[in-house]
Every structure is written in structure tokens, then in C-alpha cells.
Amino acid sequence: MSTELRPRPASDDNDGPSFAETALKLGGKSDDEARRTGAIDAADDQVEKLFASQYQTANSPAHRAVWDNGVPVDLFQSEPAMTPPAIQQVMDASVEIVRRHRDGGSLYNDEHKIADHVLAELGQAGYWGLLVDPAYGGSGAPFSSFAPFLTRMATIDPTVAGLASVHGCIGAVDPVRTFGTDEQRQRFLPGLASGERLSAFALTEPGAGSDLTALKTTAVRSGDDFIVNGEKLFITNVVPGRTIGLVCLIEGKPAVLIVELPREENEHFQLRKYGLWALKHTYNRGIIFRDFRVPTANLLAPPKGDGLTIAYHGLNLGRIALCANAAGTMRLMMANIIPWANFRETYGQTIARRELVRRRLGQLAGLITAADGLVAWCSGLIDRGYRGEMECIVAKIFGSEAQKHAAIELYMKTHGGRSFLHGHNFGDNVHEYLAPCIYEGEGEMLAMGFFKSLVKEHGKTFFEPIGKTLAAAGIKKPNPFNPAHAWALKSVAWPYAKWMIARRLSSGAAPQLPTMPSELRKHAEFACENLHAMGLEISQTMSKFQLALADRQCRMAELSQRCQDLITMLCTSLYGARQQDELVRNAADVLCQELKSKYTGKRASNSYYRQVTDLGAAIAEGGFKGIAGLDGGEIMMRY
Image 1 (cartoon, rainbow, N blue to C red):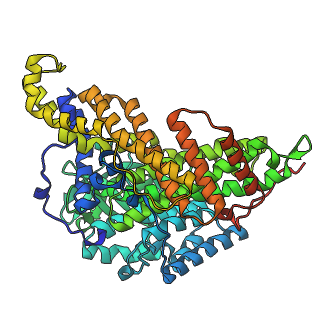
Image 2 (image 1 turned 30 degrees about the vertical axis):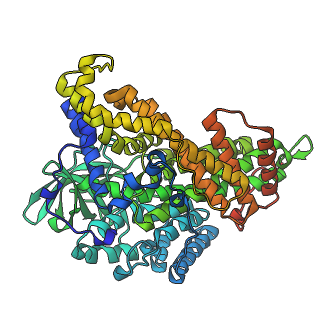
Image 3 (image 1 turned 60 degrees about the horizontal axis):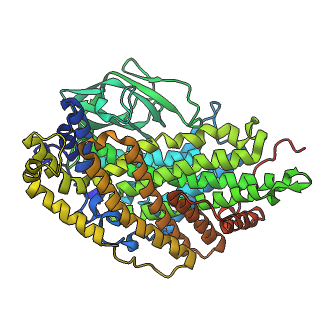
């Protein structure tokens, strides 16, 4: 759908205050806070309008699983990616280039960044144009092929995999192909496809991270140019000569300019260098603009909304890509654990025979399998035309938290003190393992974004009319036993009362599950039953806190996480059920058991421990096909 968008006049975008702005004003927040939060919510509304109604958030799988009478199981199914041969050839060639340079010691330059000659070779192979339409020199890969390919590339080098996401998902490629005019696409996309102009996205500022209303970089029109002033921070893949999507303010409103940075720094454009532990193999810099000129023809005009609309659109692709990268990175951890576990002895026996180590390997397989399942599911939704906002948030949070847990609890603890040796994968990359919890949106902040998207339609339908009526009547603390309050609310409260009665009396329609192994089927049924129950619990929470809910961040994050865990359980059980490999099915079962124990608060059973350690034993013996061919790396200090 993205290549068919065309600009519309700005007057089409005036739809009044958003749900968030209205709720915050009714809740007594300052006009400034309500306006600023409302601007973010309005951008979200405008992104929604880029999609046909059946693909918007209210009709998404995650939303319907909670609010419909039954979970639409078919929308949680994923299918194996069907990659066209020509695209597969580009992918295979790209992997071989990176493998050759890695093995030959020529992957990095003198600054230990991915070397320019590697980036150029990848361009010749077509790597940078995978998401660009063939009409502009790319391959036009389906996202359901591109995302799992990133997992494969990450097993060779996670940084190279990450750069494909920066360039194609959150960099300049997605904004231009989605929101550019025909002329802009013709002008920018061929160079982006060939890799002649690699790209970045410049959004974050020293004082603007999650609060994007605090942007200060400005662009003022002067003839046929905009004059840009301001500073950006933490911009990945930026060096002189890059093409960036720059989010700035034009006449006080967020906008996106496609900016071709000069080949060298000058008085109008400088890079701010700083020490950064994470992202160490790619350039991450601040950008300073002083009276920097950009042609007005480089302004992107979305059909609805403003620059924040453009910014929000590409983030979902990047969130799937992050989960895909995590799936590859965790495979590297597993491949590195196995030779060590079979070498290291304690009390005359290798640790590969110890329950704790076997449990760690089994758990790691579960995390990998769930990440694979989420990537396949979310990328398929994108290809089918869904916005996928909530689903992509689930993938991002799970992928980043799984990678963090795997690194600290499974990988580091198995390798012990050797983890901190120079040259060890953990010690050398620990910040790479942790950083995804922050970029592409910090996890708990995103969890609240998930919750906001989940409750928005329900709130607009039932709670906004009640809030407006209370405000008009001057009632700050409603009491249903007060006749005056009850009379004031009689017309607006009745629809919610009817919904509440119906939901309390309904257990939800039985899920239409495919043929599945019995244990995985039980997990899917548990997830469906409790997703339906979450609707009532969430609504009661909204009723309890009313307009003060916005200040209950801890409760929102907790409810959000439980919903996410149920969605991950359903997705993983369905994904595992269609796998032919028994170890993968067992890994899916293990992950679902852990999520169920977390959800219910029950202790793990003895049968779970037997299963996860048996799984780990099979993995230690080389049974996990998902790491076939991966180099386990050097065992450091063999004594």
C-alpha cells in the first residue's frame, strides 16, 4: 500500500483534538501537557488513516483478541516465507560477502567499523536495495522474506544485519518509497538501492527522545530552500555523504526533509563525536546544522498528518527487524555455549551433563523459537496490509528482553569468568546485547504505547462520553449512589453498563484452532481464554481510575505485559505446531510453559524441568538445526 500514497492538502488533517488530549484535559492536566501528548496521539491517528479500515489497529489481531467475543486465531497464524529466486540470490550473495570478509579479517576498518569496501560490495550484490521497488533499481523483497533473512545475516554479523534495518526500515528508504512523490522517488531511490547513498533517520535530539513534542531543530523557508538549524543525537549510520530523513519543525509543525549530507564537514554541517559503548561497529554521531540549506523539493508530504506520521510509519518495520536480529544473535550465543559446555569439566564431568546448563540451553531454544515465530507473524501481517503497531511492539519488546535475558542469565553465567576476557563474545559485545532494550523505543515506554492503542477505541466509545458529561456537570468524583450523579450519567453510562453485563455473561467463543500437538494446543487455548478475560479486567481498571489512569504507569505497564505474554504464547504455540522439527516443537512448548507460569504465578513442575533439560541435552549433542553450520568460536584459556 505504501507506494500508492499521495499528498493531500493540509486542510484535510484538521480532525479536532485527539482522544489523549481530550482525556488529559478532562483529567485536569495542564493545557501544555494535554496539547503535547495530544500531538503524539494525533500523529498516531493520522498513521491509522493511511491504512484501509480492516487493517487499522482496532481490527488488528492483538486488539480483536482482547475485545472481540472470540480470538481470531487465523490472524495469529504465520506461513513460511516464499522468497522469489532472484531475491534469494541477492540474499545468498550478501551473506557470502560478509562471511568472506569476516573469515578473512577484512570486515572492519581501522576504527573497527564496518569497512567501506564491504558496504560497497554489498551494494553491488543488491543488499541495500532489498526493500526498494525494482522500478528504482531494487529487488522489492516481501517483508516476510526480508525479516527472517536479517536473522540469517545476524548469525554472520549482527551489525551488518542492523544496518540493513537502519537503511531500509527506519532510514530514508521507507519514508521516500511510502511518502515521496514520483519525482522524489526517481531522484532518491536509485542511489539508496545501489548503496551509493546509504541512509539514516535523524529524529532524536538532546532534549527530545520519547517526548517528540520537544523537538527544536527548525527549517525556515528561504526562496527555493529551507534553512536548517539544530542538533540531532544518537544517529546510527551517519557519516558525511549519507542521505538522511530529518525530522524538524517547519512553521511550528513536525516535518521530514530528505537531506543529502555533504561529503565533508563544513561551517554549516558538523558531526558531534562521543564515546558510545553500544553500536561499536557502526558510526553513531550527533549532527549539528547551522544555516544548512536543503531544497524545498526535498520535503515529504504525507497524505494525512505531518512529520511525526512519517516517523511513526517506519518504526514498525524496524521493530520487527530488531526481533529478527535478536533471533540471530541468540543463535550465536547457543553456538558458542555448546563447545564450551562439552569442554568444561567440574568434578570430573562436563557441564553439558549438568542440569543447570542443560536447562539454559533448553530455555535459549525457547527464546529463539518464540522470536522466530513473532518475526514470521508480524512480517506476514505487514505484507498483508496491516499496520501492525501493537504486534510489532510485542515483537520488539520480546526480542530485546529475550536477548538481554539470554546474554546475562544463560550465556554469561555458563561461561563464567571467561565471559570477561578480551576477545570473548560476551565481554566484547555486552552493550550490543543490552542496547536493543532502549533503541526503537524503551521497553516499558513501548508497553504503555501498546496499552494506549489497546484501550483507545474502548475509551472513546464508553469513557470519553462519561468524562465529558462529568466535566460539564462539574462532578470530579462520581458516586453512583448519589441520585444527582446517577441522573447526570443516565444516558451516557447505559451503553457501558450493557457492554459490561454482556462481557460478564460471556466466556467467549471457542477458538478455531488448527490441528496441533496436544500440549501446544493447551497453550493456545489458555492464551485465547485469558486474552478474552483481559478485556473485562482492563475495562474495570479504566473504570476504577477513570481520568487518573494516565498517571498509573505501573499498572498500565503490568497489564500491557500480561497481554503481550499471552499474545507471544499464542503466536509461539501456533508457530511451533507447524514445525516438522521435534526439538523446535519442544522449544515452543518450553517457552509457553514458562510464560504460563509467569502469568499464573505457579511454580515450575518437575515434568517441565525434565523436559527442558532433555531438550538442552539434545542441543548439547548438536541436535538444534537452527544453528547448523555456525562456528562455535574459540574456547579461551583451555586449561
